[in-house]
Length: 318
Image (tube, rainbow, N blue to C red; front, top):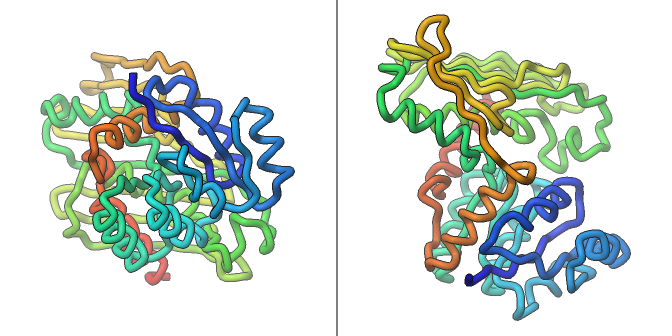
């Protein structure tokens, strides 16, 4: 089987999940890792039996044996890292949020198309089998017309203005870090952009957003979304319709999903994943690259652009 040869940009926490899960993607190999410090890259490479370790990302981008890169640097570095990778001829899978402004996303999208390369925001939730099952139930009319969408995602993050999650110079705040999950969940089940937003937001002393409640009124449908650095939220997703409803515990990393008619659970799906769940997006992205695609139909550039604009508008509302 043909395989895409991947390199990892940054040896941070989330890169470990990628390295652990790629072994379950049959069309992908992890061949290199780069970090700011060679010691960090070497330790990471040793832990996951990766052949090459680089100090600095440019060295990785210059490696002819690397086809694609996974970028997991802080939010504010995504644009420059992705741009450099694309200019070097590498396909790009970039952690969410892919950029910190709609303008930067448009530039990356145009560059990827110009270079004939694949570019995708790593919205791993979209590729989870349980989420795909929920989408299929909705598309098949199993819950009737959608009337409500509910999703929340929050974990307590001790306030430290110098830490990456809180640092405003690194695009810190709960909306870009965690809030993108409920927003993306909502958009998967309702792609309309015609809504009236009602936003309640709270900010930390340094100005970073710490708790954001979002009610989006679409007329015949309402979405209730919440994200927070203050508390652990239920982290549940729900899609409610005229004939039934769907409940997804821990929707952002969903392993299971249930379909209800009133109080009766009529179907229950549990995936048989081997890894943490990253393997599904890795497999899909790798297959798209092997097929010469420049976008994923599941997570196209247009979806990333919508989320970028939506987050910008929400932050400006409080």
